[in-house]
Length: 156
Image 1: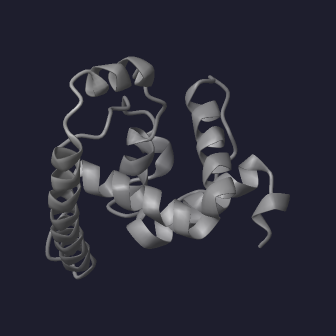
Image 2 (image 1 turned 60 degrees about the vertical axis):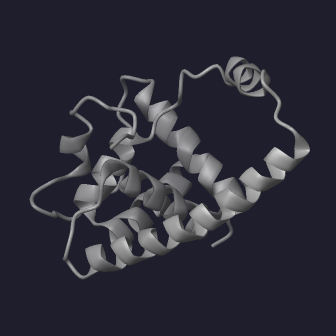
């Protein structure tokens, strides 16, 4: 599979297939509901964040503390995903979103990931239907049914 030679629609189909295989149809539908462009003004947010610059020592301390926290978060995520795969728990919306993004990045790499999202956003912003592969049922949830539900930003 040469991702650089694929059309956006082909990338989208490969992405949907991989998401469905890894997440199942219900979580794939939830992931797609949450996956939409943001209205955030990143420049304004950056200026707010940089307004009160801490000292270098404080920055280094924060980096070290955050690295310890990140490792613990990764351990917990890995345990929760393993438990979900065994059928022991349900994932939160943000876990579904993060796992879906990781699956797409792992399968399609950067170029394919971007092409998948462009195709998905194109579909969100138009009234015309985009040909997509049918998902196999998981509690009778199909992509077509899920896309009729209003989309929301990912949150817990």
